[in-house]
Length: 219
Image 1: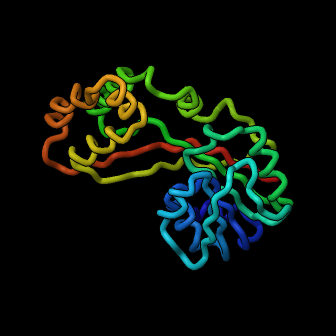
Image 2 (image 1 turned 30 degrees about the vertical axis):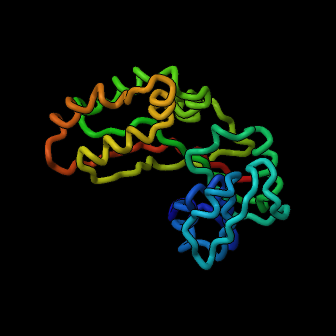
């Protein structure tokens, strides 16, 4: 968030698009005077974490309802592949101030250590047909998406967490493809790797990393 804020000439208004539970909006709140955080899901907006600088609204990415040339920064975290991308880009160009910044990022598989990574990859391949088609855009690290503006060079970023085996197994079970597999086949696909993953993980806490694929440009 500090890097994105430093890219902006002004820090008056940020739009966090597809905010979900508001994690990115909350992180932006220390850098911008005001944040408008939108999501197409009313349930997500109702459950988002409140903050005095954040105005939560139900709105689609392609039709934000924001004023033209009013936004200094747009952020999209792990959601651009769900949008009607060309229409969203039109909306982004409409609401950005001249010189405003658009940033979108995604993450794919996490990294722990080679043997554990191999087990997670085995699961990922086992449930491949249960991912939605948009998942391929994430697998491509957004390389096939062209921003409607000149790109800004960015350093490498990653998310990190310190987890025990139970936390990792719980996370894997939240994958949409795992949930769909369970609904359609009646069995938990994570069970296929659970014993091996627990043995490799042990009782210790391990660092889990998700390298980010960041697309950023200036209007």
